[in-house]
Amino acid sequence: MEDKIFEECLDYYINSKGAYWKPLAEKHGFPNAESIRCKFKDERIKRGIPSKTGFETSSKREILDEDGEIKYSEKEEIKSDGSVYSDKLIRMSEEEKRSPTRLLELHGFDPDLWEIVSCTNNLWHAMRKNDLGRLLQYQSKLTAKPKSGNKITFSDIDKFFNNYTYKTGIFPKKHKKNNGKVLEIDIADMHNGKVPFLGDDTVQENFYYTMSEILQKIEGKNISKIYFNPMGDTSNFDHVNGSTTSGTIVSQNKSLQTVFDETTDMFINAITKLSEIADVEVLHIPGNHDVGFSYYLVKSLEMYFRKNDNVSIDTDHRPRKFRKIGKTLIGWNHGNISKANSIQWLQVEAREEWGQTESSEIHSAHIHSQMTIEKGGTILRHLPSMTPTDQWHYEKGYVGAVRSTCCFLYDLEKGLEEQWFINIPN
View 1: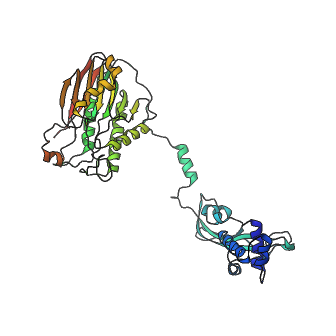
View 2: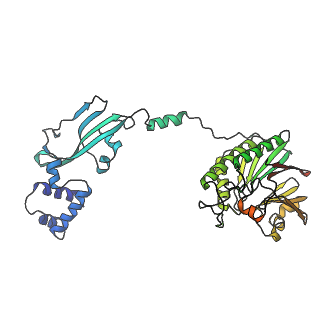
View 3: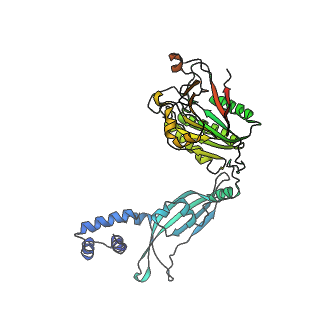
């Protein structure tokens, strides 16, 4: 309903006696009296204006003075408990009367420093002299008290961030490209969240022990590049219900969220420390247990290290990766590939790099134990895992594998020079 029509209807509704809906309907083109009455009622309720009875009980009809100002005595009182009572006549919208912040402002209080104790708003209906029309305002009674010291204001937030020193873990570029050694660290089949069959096990302790041993072995080495490769099955399960990517329910002793938090922290700490020594590249290699989890993990690492020039994260969706390290071509996959294709894929997918190198290797995980096969000029190495035996592996007799993490040190001219095994103590 248009404002002009509504105002005219409101005037008749409050002040007139007898039948007035029919003349209004005819004047404004409504089909009958009931139609305009119902339309007005809906609009009146929508605008928060009380019924005729409500006007008589909760609102006041006053005449303005000769200057056109409403005759209303405002009141403000400071109470003994430090609160302030304010009684004012305020023009405001329906939205404003429901906003504590706006009500404080209309009463002259700073919302950052004051909070409402109580507030009552009554519609004020004032008539102008000389048939100048009506004013609709609110008699607003509000009690406010100062915010206590433990309340945070927007000013407090601005002040905090203006003075805050960010600690981002970002390091300046300081590594020179040279002909130093290249180190490969393969974290294979960690299976965080798995329930060990015998005894207790702490994934974080084993991981940090492994990294500590690696850092000791790095001392004195001229390393220019480090590959840090989660080789898949970093988490034992991929879904919150404890199932793998394919839906198989497996053992779990932690929630998926806890596994993600722990693993992210471990990898960030390790990569940060390694990046102080040499440039670090992280390759995304998904496992058969954790296709989704492993991708979310490397994307999180990508965001964390996005401004660190010493770290690069390969989040390419392909499950197999390869790199040329000097005269050696290295390929990585989780190992859950068919036996027939376990070696030949590298020559097909890396044709150009294959022709530029003198030797090639494929490093795979998945079977939790060491195995080396050489075929067609390519060495296939199955890598060990630091994970303990769970009930399924124990019942199937898959026991006795040495719990270990494998690292490889390459010379750009001579190829693979050293192979390190970091064994988990019993």
